[in-house]
Image 1 (cartoon, rainbow, N blue to C red):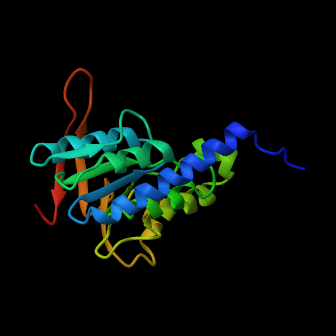
Image 2: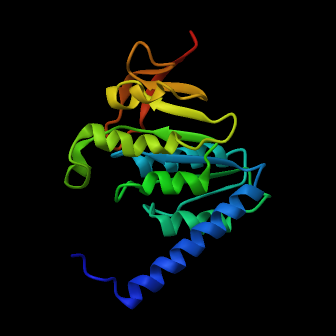
Length: 201
């Protein structure tokens, strides 16, 4: 038998449910804001920060703070987003089974980025296949015109393109990647540098 949750836990769960419902409603009002969600076994925070930094050079926007990626952080970030902003980029954690799908239902991302699938969730999800299925839930409830950005070097990630109805952009070192990187240098303290190939350029 499972122990009954404490009153404090029940109060927290009710507040979280209310916050997620409010965030989902607010998200539907923000039709002109591009929502970008990032998940994966590692590299989520770096990817989110790079996306936000690139977009902020041209647009006003918002992002989840620091390494925050739980449901509560996501809900608060959505609720703080206004119609005057051009983008909102959020990091999405797996945590427990169903978390990514629950978050995707709130965010309805216009762009979903999946970095990779690794063994760091082995205690919860047991296998890479189950981990991949959890992460793929970010693509499960897209808005019309959703774009999936997938790692072509990771077989568990690139397999997510199958059956996805929206646009797919692939990245990596693979010759098949639409955005292909080579000549990658990242020796600290020098800057990260690379040659990017895109559509023959």
